[in-house]
Length: 265
Image 1 (cartoon, rainbow, N blue to C red):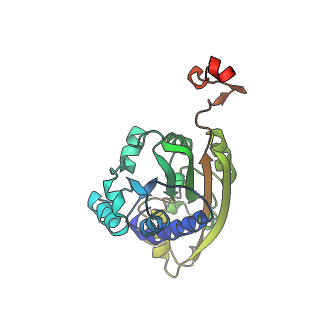
Image 2: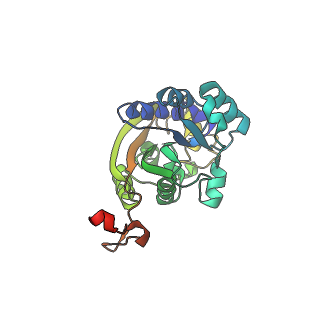
Image 3: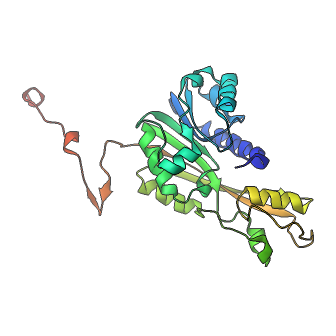
């Protein structure tokens, strides 16, 4: 996301947190990716008052901005190391977070910007504790469908990096060993009075070239844009079990306990 769409990121985070109200989860540590100085920090602090919040910060967010936001919402988070930025994750392919160290991964409108969402899911599996939860939202392939219906080569339209629908993501969660995935989707409509505002938002959503054309008539562009917002969550269960491959389950010998005389007596 970029600053022009901060309101959208806040709105979707709020809807995600409402969905978490019905989920029972003992949370000591939360990883927010991407994190930004938004109102979600206050809600997370109220919902999980004893939790620390670790951040994978969004591009353009300074360490001081996050420190100040956390100081105002949850002082415990000040003692959590600022994990890394999205740029760090993009270059290294890893969160700067230890294995089995968080109970909740909260990801708001990120997955559609990643070339390989499966790798992101693998990292979430790595850092989640047994019984932990991943919850996320992202933009689905129907986002901006009104623009794609136009025959305007000068718009230089682009597809989302990861055009996965909710069924694709559900399959990917199961493939990465997550349990009981729950997926749902809704359409949001953005209405515009000025073409310049529509073009600015589409550029911010990375649906077109970052430099939109200067002169496109109002009568040519649609006055509304559809966003397909996909939500999902899944559990990290059975982390001590080996991953199956080719229908054969491989189990580490260290996971097999030896029965002693006293056990068999």
